[in-house]
Length: 274
Image 1 (cartoon, one colour):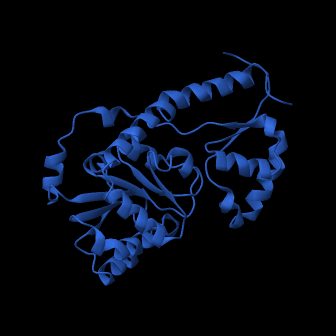
Image 2: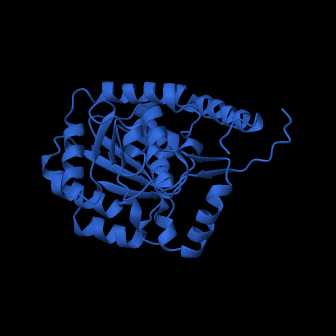
Image 3: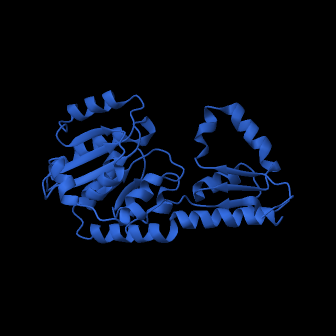
């Protein structure tokens, strides 16, 4: 569709905390806001921040991220994948997919496990998948100090993340800030019940008590209790399946593409607010 209607669209995919470190960029952004035809955020939390920055609510649009769920629908030998890593049949496997950056909350997670380790009824492992952005040595020292070397493994950046998700039992994301996390969606698509912190759009993806648990950020005690509760929850498989279905219905790649196509058609037809 060709259009000669001049229009500008802005999209923000993270909370505006970055503006504190880049005040000049923040001023430029806010200067440009009135010139935008439409402004799009990928979570209600981001859209709310944009509204607070003075953007006309009529110009705001919400379009969630979408992921390709096809790989999680394919057959997978879970037992063999676990056996290759020396994981016992009755072990509880947790997984977090997040680069090793302070705001991702890995240190909180290690403290959480140190607080509940004596109450976990089965052997357990936590696999941390993600690129080291400078804190791996610090985290490993923390793991060793808590006596968790045999339980918590820093796996680095991986190309086989879907395999880890499909062999795990529980997914975790304990960030201090997020926009809208694809890592959560991928865990849900793999059928994992999720334990996440209530930042950004996390609570928009995970329905507390139905597809996982949502806890406050920076709260290792609450995080640990949620992990323990999930480990002991006889309904966790059903919660994971509910999350998988929610991802199919609301966060698929096709749903995301359809929403953006509708956005561009709206602009192209000149239907956007002036």
